[in-house]
Length: 167
Image 1: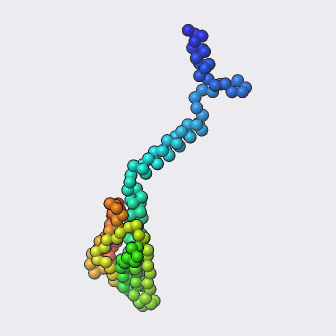
Image 2: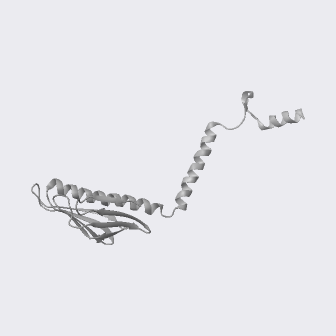
């Protein structure tokens, strides 16, 4: 019996040159196994969540639109002029047209922000006009959608404050 245990122990050990005996795994092997398993877990999370790409796209574009509106409001306050932000579609591509009226510091300025053709922008009203004090004449709700994922931007009329609801 004792011989069988010794023989079994000897079979489980691997001998290297110089007579060293190795039991178990090295730290590098353990790290590689953990990396492979975590990579498989991450890859499977993308496969299982079909809205992952849409969620990220809508999130980033909602933030872009809200920052554009916030910049328009701050520009109206800083330059003491009216700034209009209007949603347009050209060749099925969503765009924002920004028009800064002539003010005491400089002439009229225009700009366009292209949002792309993968998303849809539902707006009510289609144009937001920021006065020189940063307020808007009426509340506005703009919704960025792609598939079933939606983000929302709300502009309050009394303060002109831009708030975001991310997906």
